Each structure stands twice: as C-alpha cells, then as structure tokens.
Image (tube, rainbow, N blue to C red):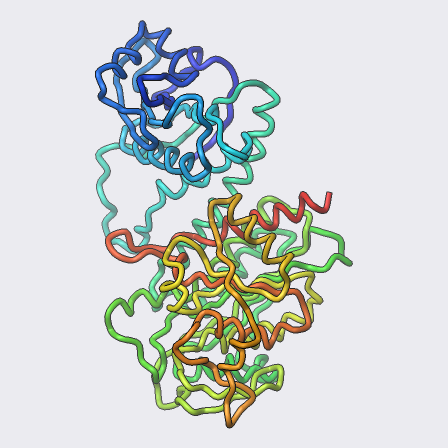
Amino acid sequence: MEFSVKHGSVENQRSACFVVGVHEKHKLGAAAAALDAACGGVLSRTLKGNDIKGKVGDTLLLHHLGEHMERVLLVGCGKAGEALSAADYRKMLGAALAALKGTGAKDALLTLTELEVKERDLAWKARQAVELAGGVIYQFDQLKSKKEDKEKPPIKKVSLLVADAAAEKAAKEAVRQGQAIQAGMKLAKDLANLPGNICTPRYLAEQAEGLAKGSKKLKAGILDEQEMEKLGMGALLSVAKGSRQPPRLIVLEYQGGKKKDKPVVLVGKGLTFDAGGISLKPAAAMDEMKYDMCGGATVLGVMQAVAELELPLNVVGVVPSSENLPDGAANKPGDIVTSMSGQTIEILNTDAEGRLILCDALTYIKKFDPAVVIDIATLTGACVVALGSQASGLLGNDQALVDALLAAGQASGDRAWQMPLWPEYDEQLKSPFADMANIGGKEAGTITAACFLARYTKDYTWAHLDIAGTAWKSGNGKGATGRPVPLLMQYLLDRVTSDK
C-alpha cells in the first residue's frame, strides 16, 4: 500500500473514498462538516437518522454524495470536544481501515489525523495510520496453490490530509518511519508464519545474508556447528543434537553511527521448531511451535527497518537458531552441559531449551562491547498465563533501560510490563550436580527463566522481553503479529532523539 501526505481543504480534494470522523449526539468532525456543506447537508441528515451513533469504532459507508464524492466513510470518534486516548484512536483507526478494505475503492483520503489524541502529536497519529494499515491488509498466502478470489480490488493508495505545509513535512517523516516499521513487521510475520520444514536455521541464515546484500551498512556473519564447537557453545549445540537440521548463529551488524560508538545488541531466540525434545510437548497446537523463532524473526525485521531508515546508530542483531526434537542423540533430563561461559547446566526439562541457546549467544555478544543488550524470546508459557496477549514480559538488570523500553511500548502501542528479578527467585535454579538447573520449578516460571539468563549478562546492561503471549495469535485468526518490532524500533528512534 502506498502512502502520501496532502494539505488543503478536504472539499477540494479528489478521492475514491473520503474517510471522515463523526461524533456522538449527531456531531460532525471538521472535515465531515466541510464535506457536508459541499454535498448539501447529506451527512447531517444521515446522522439524524441514527444510522451511525458516533461511538468509537462505528463505521458507515455512504455512496454518491456529489460529483467528486463517490464514497464517504463515516467513522465514529466518540464525544465531541474530548481528546481521544491513544488506545481509542488506534481502535477507531483500525476500524476505519478494516472498513476501507471492504469498500472496493482503490484509493482513499484519510482525515482522521485532525482528531486530538491525549499526549500524542501529528507525527504519532500519522505513523499509527501506516502501521495499522499494514496489519489490516496483511495476509499470508504464499504457500497456497490457488490464491483466494477477491471480488473487490485491494486498496492501493492512502493519502493523509493535514492542515498545512509545516504539518505535511512532519507527517511525511512519520509516514517514512511507519512504512519501514511496517515492512519490518511484515518480514517478521512472513518468517514466523512459514512452516518448520521451510523455515529452518539455514533458511533464517540465508534471509539474513539477503538483508545484508541489500544494504551497504549491513554485514552478515554466520557461524556453523564447527565454529560454535571451537567457541565452546555446549548449551546451544546440545539443543540441536536431536535434529537433522544443523544449527546456526546468525550475526547482522549495522554501522550507522561512528566506529567508536558502542552498539545496541539485539538477541532473538530462533527455535524454528520446538517439539520439546525428550520432554515432548502435548500434540494439541504443537503446529504453533513453528512460532518459537519469533524472537529471531523480530531481530531480522528490526535490522531491516533500521537499515531502511539509515538510523545514526550502531546495531547488532544476533539469532541463535536450531530445532528442538526428540532423538536418540537428543538431550535427556538429567544431562549436564557446559555453556560457552564455562558454567555448567543440569537439564531437568528439555523443553526449557530457549534459555540454553540464548545463554551462549549472550556470552558471545560480549565481543561487541555493547552499550545495551536486549534479548527477545518466546520463552515461557508462564508469561502467557501472567500477562495474556496484551503485554510482553519485561525484566532486566538496569532500571533505566527497563524504563526506556516501557516508555517505548506505551508510545508505540506495543506494550510491555515489568516483572521482578529478585535474588530470591534465583535460588530456585540451584542444582546439586551442576552450577545451575535449567528450570526453577513450577512457581514464577517467567522470572526464573530470566534469572537463568541474568547469570550470563552480568558484564553489561541487559533487558529481556518474553514475547510468548504477544508474538502470535491462535484460533481462527492464527498468525504472527510482528510484535515487538514496533516497541524496539520506537526504543531505537528514542535513542536517536536523545543523542541529538
């Protein structure tokens, strides 16, 4: 979908569909009022007929209101004179874009950025429109032999109408950011939605190499089994022993800042399929374990967006990738492995494998002398129980970093929630036979998993995002969400702003 920005009076514009806001109690928004005057009061009469109540998210499509008004989509914006909350604006905008998708219009003029949103500016409103539009039109049909027939052509162009030239400049930059973020989300969703027989560790590595070929500022490096063995990555390699697919450690380096600037390092769990190993998962919904690489997909999506926007930062993306399957060579409960750090791990549950591949990656990335490290992983079912699908779990060893990520989540609408990382929880990882166990019992599973990772991150500033509840949806709308690409991109954009 193509986005552009225009300024001027709405009644002087041409579009296959005008999208305007209306309020409760038969009140027209500013753009709607201007169109109403141009079409002889049709909109006012429609509101009085109560065909649309004006509540947030209501929509009503009208046809042939004038010579240049083939379609007008009315969108409910709540009470007149009251600023919308960020959540209500996103709800209203999402409903408008979903309704727009079904109109048959090839282009549309969106005037909803005129609405006031609490503590949000025009740039935020414009970027949200782009990001949400991408989600509305997204579909994954690459592997279908026959594409679904569409009675109505997809909308190809959306124009955002703003007040003046100064606003147009700010909105254009926001649109540019939104398009890059949405493209990063699309890449993350496409990779995650692919089945495990296609999206293997080697396939992920090839995608990373493809990204590097497309940008002069990106460099890819792939470590194979032999190289990982030389480095002593016994934890990561142990997870892959039950699979015929060889593991890979994927490294993408983006040089947008000065050479001496320390990089932001992102580490994404890349389990391309997780059957649980010897501790086999239940059969129900096991197909969804192709999504256990959403952390890795997120890292690739973020690196693509960073390169597209040419952010003046240094960013490194690292994806430890393998499969976790049962086999005669696979890890067994009770096995003890030695991680790259030299610490030994008693594997009490082979299905707690994500932390095993992450811990070696978190040791490896010390070579980059990072400014901060953020790992992203579909790590624990306990996080789904605790937070559902609304927020990602967030833990870390530095409150300033945690606060920055929380703020980025609020600003982007891709929220996280902080959980404690107290020493008392770490006690649950004690093992009589090794330096630690890979699980801490049934209590506080998300926290003890983060405590495990924290043992490998003492030399740098670190935060952990558990995205087990937010990375994909189940049921009829099954599919990857592209989260937390928006959160991480907002965090990086905030770093750029704070450095100026």
